[in-house]
Each structure stands twice: as structure tokens, then as C-alpha cells.
Image (cartoon, rainbow, N blue to C red; front, side, top):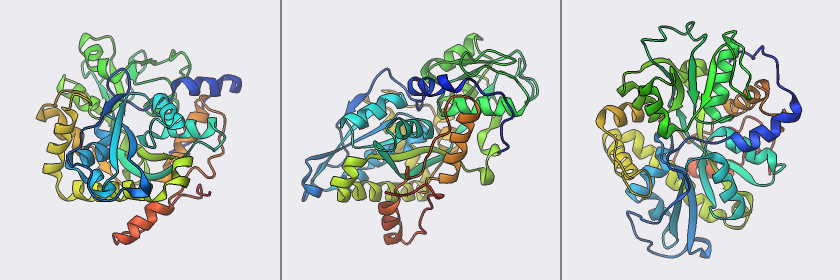
Length: 369
């Protein structure tokens, strides 16, 4: 994507802003425990562990862990070691849980992963795999916005200040020549940060004119009368950009590599099953979303079907796009230029990929131990 030609905010305020703001998008007000598994622990324990604790969001962009848990694939690969999960609605909360040991492995968006790595001076986490690409769109009220050049004076929502979609919208508006203060969201276009769970209501009530949001929120807005003005895939080479990564605590990776490998094996096998069984996969996803520990409610077909189709599961972390997303945050003034060298460790992922007869993933020069 072209570089943003927009004035940066004062660097001194950038990191504190990002610290409190970056997050993935989800539902619910706090992490919920999900101890149910489709398959009971059976067999020897991996690395002698009683359990492996994973975290994710109740979003279609986190289809891999949701479907993998529903089908029992994660528990199958972990054998006698129980898989325990927590559901989050914001990136900072998941990073905090990873740092405290409340979870060992997590599915999370690129912005909070970057922030967690930078804040810890490269010591807290590693990105060990990709999980999803795409699944983000600009949905607008067609009665108020007829085209991409008709955004001036309008109010567009994003899930959270500095989160992955917020950075993408700020970057896009700057490219289009609109001036927006990244901190306040005020300018030629008003950027309003609101939680995904209330975005559809705000849209229907007319308090926002559109939203740059992930699935399934995007499809919810379309079902409410919205129009897809821009699929973010159009802005990326080959239509691919990372929306969900798999991260792990560096301490857990060092102490329990066999357990990490088992989780990655489950992830890779789940993604392969999703691609080869789309109808069954969307059914499993909706069943898991209906779990009281996730959202407690299944989605109707006119929402879950397009939401599922708009997301591409991937084992590849699409590392080059992570660097671009970091650059966009810097250009928006939300982050000082980070050193991301070492943020990836794809050793175990590539071991699993080789065993499955798949090509290795590339870390775009951002690997290292």
C-alpha cells in the first residue's frame, strides 16, 4: 500500500496511546472461561502438563480455535493434557493474560501483538503462526454515502482507538487526502471508536454513517441495510493481509515446545479441514459461537454465511503485511517506529507444515530467537 502522506502526531504521546488502545475486536465485557471440550483428555500428557491454556475472541476471524475446539481437534492433538480456553474482547486484556500466565497461547490481531512485543522490549511473546486473513470491510449507510469519495463530514466507527481496523481506516483516509486527528478522531471525517457489540445498534439508530469492522460485525451491518463500500482485501497485494496471528509466551515456548507443537498441529489440521469441509465448518463455528461461554447466541444464515466466506484461514502469518501494518500505525502517529526483529519464531510451525507435506512459511526477515 502507498505510504501515508499525513502529518504525524507528537511522538511523545504515541506509545502511551497505543498501550491503552490496541486491541482485537470481540464480544463480551471480559474474558470468559470455556472449559467444555468436544473430546475428553485421553492418553499420555504432553510435556507432563495437566492443561494448556489458550485465548481467543468470539469472532469469525478467530474461526480456527473456535472450530478446532468444537470438533475436538485441539484436544485430540493434546492427548491427556486438557485444553482450557478463555474468551476475550480486547487485545490488551489477552496480552496481559499471556504475560501473567493466565493463558499460554493466544489468537490475536496484529496490532496488539506488535504492541505487546514492543512494550516488553521483545521479551514477552512470539508470533508462531498465522490464522486468518481478510474479513474486514467498510460498511456504510447507502442513503448517506454513495461512494468512496463521499466520506467528508461523515462519522465512521472502528472498534477501538489504535486497534487493527482503526489503524487501517486512518491510513486509508490519509491516502484519500482527508485530515483526521488520530487521537480524537476529529477532522474531515469523524472516526468514532465503539465496541463491535453495539455497532449494529448505533448504525440502525443513525448515530454513525458507517463502520470499518471485522466479521461478523460487517455482515451484521449489511443485514441491517448497510452496503459494502470497500473490502479491505482490495488494498493488499494478492488480497491477503494478516488479521489473526497465533502468539505464545516465550517462557512457555521454551519450557514446553512439545505442547506448542501439538497446538500448532491442531491449528494446521483444523485449517485444512475448514478448507475441505466449508459447510460443516460454518455449522461448527456457529455452534461454538452459540456456546454460553462465547456469545451465547448462534447467528442467522444471512450473517454467519457471508461472515465465514469473507475470512480466509491461513497457516502463513503473512509476515510482510505485519510490518506494513506497523508502518501504518507509525504514520498515523500511534506508535514510534518499532524494531520487530525477532517477533516471529516459525520453527515449530514449519516442522508441522513439513510433516503435512506443505511448504514452509516465511518470516519476512523478522524471525530470530
